[in-house]
Image (cartoon, rainbow, N blue to C red; front, side, top):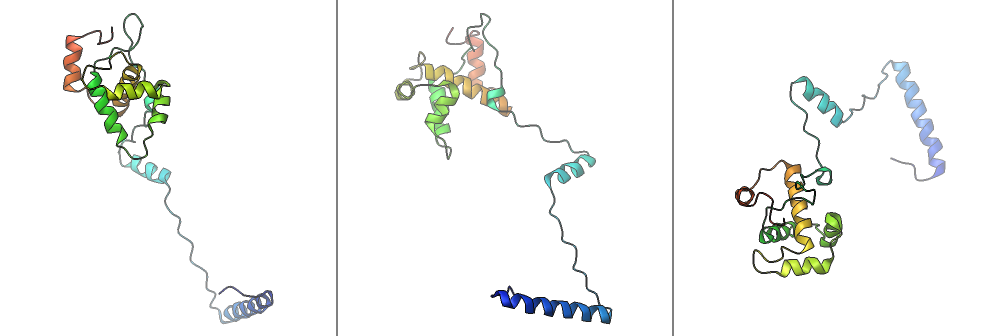
Length: 168
């Protein structure tokens, strides 16, 4: 128990000193057990490498992914319909903590008015000329590649029908 007053400290020190001397005289010196240390992640990685397990791959950021450009260097060929991109955006919006304004800034400084106009379009082909469509497509393509996911069936079909993409 901690002392309540400064004057109590001196009496506690004296009591501890006398009990220590008594234990020394009787030959019963008690040593406190060594404290156990928690494992560190590096130790786990070192022990797992000796068992033959491979280390997990480093996480790839979507910003670091490079996409193939068109033959003329004009940009990335787009193979998803605007309706598909809107569906992916709505799914992204349902994730907790997602902020549209931060996302629009990251994908290419897209204006929020342009984004709203793109999202209000009804038909699956509407909004193809909007800048949000291209920037969001590039974002989702980079995320797909960074996650190591395969191409969708619709995407493969569109690649066969439009080898240069929709916007060329």
